[in-house]
Image (cartoon, rainbow, N blue to C red; front, top):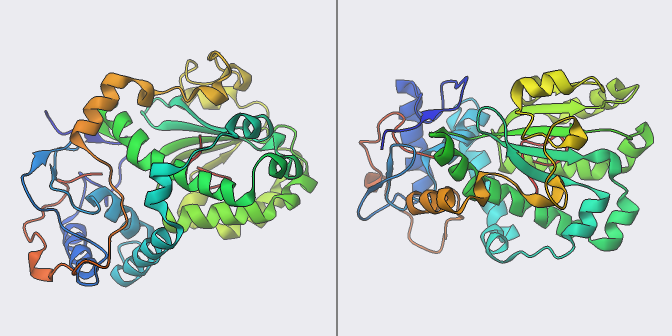
Length: 342
């Protein structure tokens, strides 16, 4: 199978588009992480993955490693620090265990108070993530769930986004999909409400930027209220410059702009689209990840890019890292965040 092309408007520093210097930096990154036990090169029979590269059971694929390198502009010490801190957090938070065991029976009750959901894809094949902040009432929310479970859910949805949704979207569209398209609906939000959710906003932003970097493709804020600029000036300092440039702020006349990026069939009717899922779009989880045939093909080729390395195992010697790693042959949203929840 031919290797799918990367996302539209792809920049250097991604799978399929590395400069010689970036390819060399990726090799060094693997070596340094392996020496300290934070990366394990794969071993055993190689098979082709959906990205046109080889899968041999490495702890992290190239797309994952490159996200951290891009987030720190290929500065090796800074990228390494970011990656190591993430791996430590993953172990402390028991991310892999959560991904495999987390259940969320209160989902329907939470959805009535704070809809956060994935719903189909945009025109470039990215998972579409929608968050309706205007309905959020923290007092009501924490009567049906807890802050701890909300955070756990957020993390699990990031993991599902990376491990499950992106591979399936890449398979269906025959190109490398690495990011999401997010819509944040502020309909009904007042300034006082922003201050009430301040801590949650900060926590979600910290999580996304530090542990799930470079996963935002497009971000639309719609129905922005009067004086939203005051809130925006408060939020912007938490976000890096690249993230800020990806965010488009729209008022209630947002339909034309959204439809330039998102098919009307993917956009819920409540957001001026055409989709009306049975039981409501926010509870449907509609998308290619619900297509059994596509999911089966994706799983047969790729088990998922991110797992926490067991540091109790001996660290891989630097010489064992594949010195023939060539440029670009291997693979790989919350409030104002890089991407999950569903």
